[in-house]
Image 1: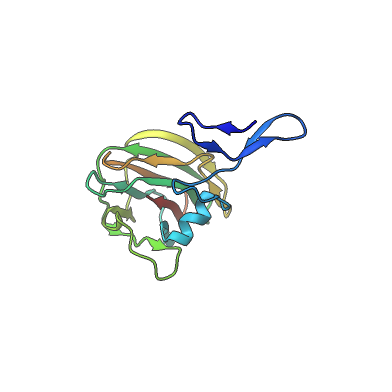
Image 2: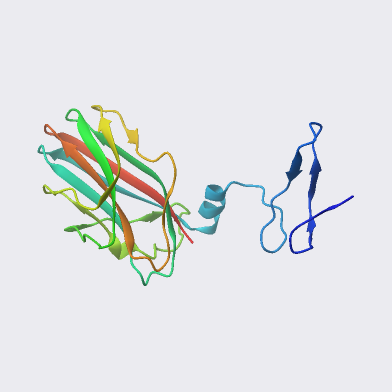
Length: 188
């Protein structure tokens, strides 16, 4: 007895020894998917990283923003946000918003497929090296120990195509020292 999808097409799979149904994943063309989504995106040139590092900053609140404008034509799946402070403890926050903060410094997204295309949102990735007020809807707040990178996301954040939405990483430092922030995302 075979298995069928709701549209009547064949489903590749069967029952394992514990009588639990299992199936193989295929793409829209019927090809077997054998790699995880992030690796596929890297190979396809759709994976990007941006970094904001400053060697000597005062005690302030600094920001790194990734904003997906309504006209980008891409969905943005942010799957990693890391922050660290070398001057002492910090407070790290992620917020979401519907307007581009367009901070004073442009950050350059790097395609992790060396030689890959530029990011569709490159002009909307910015950071601030001056004190900022935390804005937007708070998604998560974490304490940041000195000299220890903190991964802020336990699950990805989706900025859908046409949505005009963004994610901002704020770090409040309490003493002078270096600051490091990075975000990784997939554009599709």
